[in-house]
Image 1 (cartoon, rainbow, N blue to C red):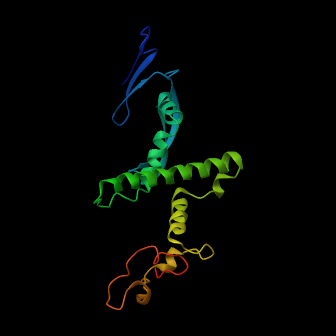
Image 2: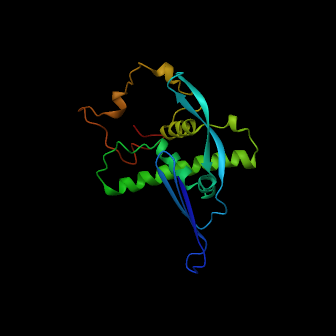
Image 3: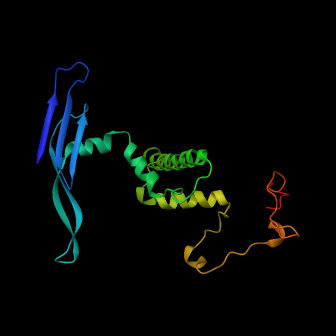
Length: 193
């Protein structure tokens, strides 16, 4: 069931389109940028329980959905990228500003990935298959943050089952307590950490 209404003649809300349809649940749109209400044929892969295989299914899709998804300056796409590899959902934030800090870092990572992908596709005309995936981009970024050597990539399969060892001489004092973190211990040349 589909319904659509166009409000015209109101100077405060020019050309408002209200569009309602039922997909797997009710979907409602209000738009001032909608230019047409048309159906577009699409295909998606679904699982057929009887045949026990994935098959392609044709269906009708409202064009206003595509206009919304592709024309809102990637706001929803950025939010989806942010939620895919969100690393602070398990953290208990003891300080209120940690949540703001972590959100900012994650938005920065999403924007960096979008900039990386856009610049390689549009400016340098690279093939999309040669670019890093979103996961691989985050992985490389994390490895760069922890200081992993660039010429020795970590092979996840070879690291399975290995225990991390720590150098007790550099991270603890003679009494067994951890080294105090300050500017001298964090110095990249003379620091003990």
